[in-house]
Length: 434
Image (tube, rainbow, N blue to C red; front, side, top):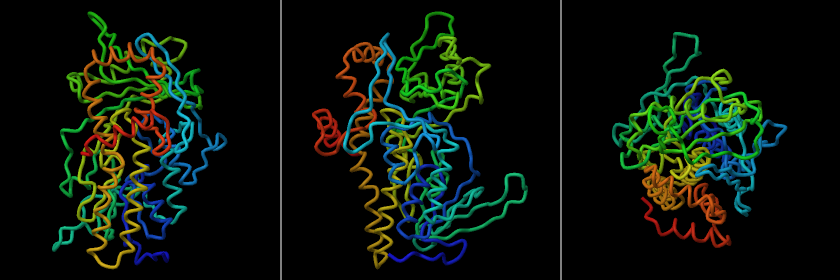
């Protein structure tokens, strides 16, 4: 394919709205294939994003594919696996040895991580505009298709924002959970899909260089009066390798206490119950506690309509089993780019549309069955009693927990794997791809 030349500063083959992991990955693969891409980011890098900062081998694989330098010299901290704590048991599980994925994960702060991906997209040829706040879509009056976006551009300190319009025959919504672009195109959140909330902060701590991600499956509210209360959700402690730990908790809306509790207070109470020498005390906190929504299991559909493709959190790609979003944001970005590249090479609008309609089908084939299993899992563990029994019984069986780790982290070899891989892949195949 010959490289596309920009028709003008404000015109491209594809507009990607949002330069998080999903948007930057999409833009990277599109630019690499020779398409002219505008990548529009409302803030300026570096910028903070609420996240656990822990990357599984799935996300690591995506970084390798994009040619990111993931060496320790480049500031990445590797982890060997997951340490699970619950029911009075402490179990350390290494990431599985697979042909399809590396046997290690990574840790990196999101302000820095997201910028690296955006710069990699730029290097590939994408045109990045920071401080470019996208508003309403521009629609073709005859067809209702999106053909561009209105945006406001300007420095953070300038009161005057320039109004600009960008035009392209295809637009990718990578604008996160709030995805104003999808809403403006009439794509609303599905209430029958699980939603999570993550709250987190950082502490200076001697545990900063832990080479395992740590997951606490029992979350106790010890704030009294009365007995301690077991809460739905899980806690995490991820060493950042820079003198700090990322400490947070994830909670599901499948629980009755989802709306009534102040999760920042729950996190503070949980931290207060930790050993004092870990340093998770208010005076060691480096930034305020912040929260974010985790849109799960395809909670916004269709993923393609009228020239708009949804990637990452905008399409509800977070894994309901473990709250992981980055790997799926990047994978969906690569899938979207591949579909767009194929569509771009077609001769007629009808043929291009046929190619684009493939995008939601590929997503459903890739994740649909697995996410259906995840939705069933989320309903179960929304009941703290079920979670307690599962933790007490399950953690004493290392083989069962090895299976559980593969299932929760979605780490199996698609072909030629072991018996566990075949069972998980088989369950994902037979589950409805909703």
